[in-house]
Image (cartoon, rainbow, N blue to C red; front, side, top):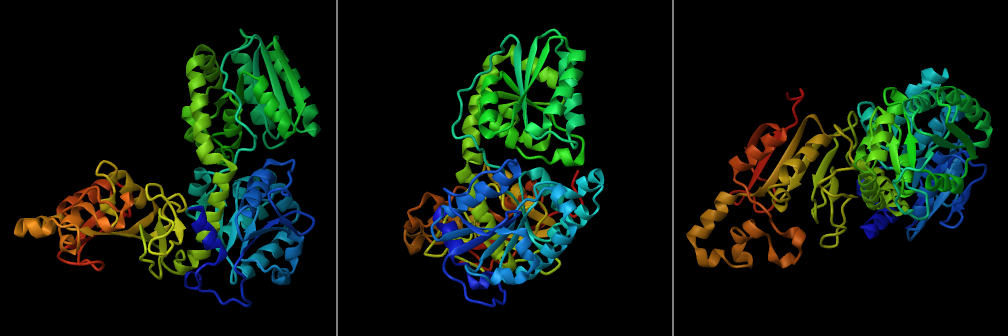
Length: 572
């Protein structure tokens, strides 16, 4: 899979992105991350460095370092100031991909003139290379809170002109109706170098940990949440360690005075933020508390990163029910009443321990830097081919799922296999979960001789996932062998029809697949008649399902085509 991603970054097919290029490209992928750095420099895994702010590390430096590990890839940091002049993009080495990294809302607000110019340069650049913008916050939701109306314009422009990456599904869903291009979820990676041993026993006093950025945007929410915890646990001696930046010490001291008036046996200590201090504080505590404004628009779309670091640190987190935390609810305690969560954790140490241990296994698969680097590579790959099937209003976006070696022009060709017969898909993706594609983002989903490769017990969920990415009114086209025809062939001449070679193409191949592939992925797991496939499609939620003439492979009568639509009005 990684080899295919590398290949796609090295040399995108010219037909997949029909742009007029003003200069030749080299074989290497040269990826520029636009950021507030002071000088243009090339990133290597060893020289990526670190930063005080999590957004710079998680959305820029770690992804850049992971991409730099890939063969024939060059990753550069491009200062924002340099984009005042579009000619900077012509400097060697010539870029093949451009990423606008996450920029703090306060920085955008303070540099409106700069960002108006930057947006013009990015819009110019997208004629010659794929441009991806990372939106890790809902700037429009922050516009009113910060008194900065330009934030709304900034976000709307990015959504209109470029493909977007976001750290969580909640933001993907938030932007789905406004984005003209793809909105791809790339989670924040974990940072801690090793998972710590899980522990879920309560000390006396009970040791709690909160870590993060404390400031005017969240101090009221954090203070009120901690006050409710202190009030609800007055019967328990508490020690609260707050890990935040040195400049916020006065805020923590004022909060300590406020909590002491509610709980006479609470001690609050401030720890100057650093990555090492954060990991050490998590290890010292019994439980991590993660209050969040789950009702406000800006708070609802936060990423998983603090919960992930808590789990990796071996501690149960008691967290507010924002969408990202709910996704990991099996590995923490997630709910509105954090006091109830802490009491549950103290009363159920064995179950709490099991949740954390299971969580450590799960996040290793999903949130490791290597896994996140792979998602960034795939997002850049997808951006490079999205010109072949752009979003409306410039043209339809059509997916060819399970494409194998049948690479179709005008489609985004998607497959789980890196290569078939020497031909690679545009996007590598498990067809059970079309993660690179946003809800309601595609005009057509087509799967030619694919549906028969899924088990019957999983096919409804698979079709519902494909249905998710379709726009209301969009078409789903399925072609597959017709079971009725295969049965007729077997009954007509059982001896000939049972052969594994070409003589079984209309019989045994229908039932089991072509054995010449010698690949379990190419085996058939269920077969359909027109009526049984219609029923499955309707059960998955498609409407206006009907049979049409098959257009691929052997066509009629061996094969059949069924076409359905996504309802334009949500079904009850």
